[in-house]
Length: 231
Image 1 (cartoon, rainbow, N blue to C red):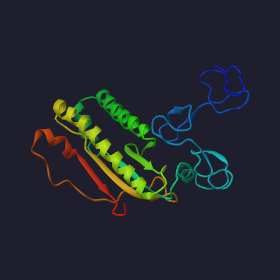
Image 2: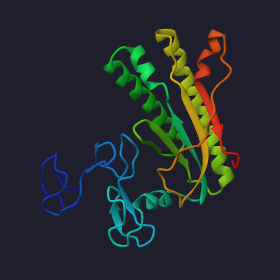
Image 3: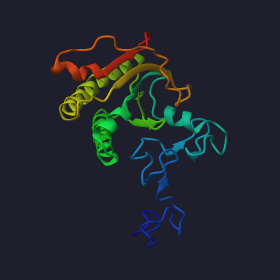
Image 4: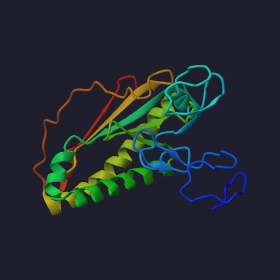
């Protein structure tokens, strides 16, 4: 293959061009996936960021800017934000182990989770937001590209309703075939661009107390939605 910068013939597996030193591929520090773009295709981590303080280009695997010491994680969020306060949607799947056991094999569960992730990625891409996976199994979607907190909150609510519908359809099929549904907790929270981007603990404590006896509504029992009062 040719280096896109200098045109030199290089090995297709090369991470860096040996001639001009252009970085061709980056290993995600979170999930270890090899990427050719600035955002990890698997977990959504931003891999290269411009420092919000000094303008230095950094790899986000380094927690701080190599020039001024500012947080690269905060720079990543600030770089894509148009408002200081915005809504964040966190999605948890608390009974993943139960679903995995019901499916009966790692291969089937891996395929199921890949289909779930593709469904979420396709939706978030359609509304021009980035989904990120942190702590192994927690989905985070930030609605920070709009210009007001109220618009951000509205976008988060609309996205939550759309994802609830998509995941409920998936759960209807799962209930019919395996007698189990994937539990999904949706938490909509307010965050600020100065906050730690990985501080997405909702602090919400709530449990479903009503369970439907209607088979057609049973899939909805697996869904729980909570939100900050400020939003």
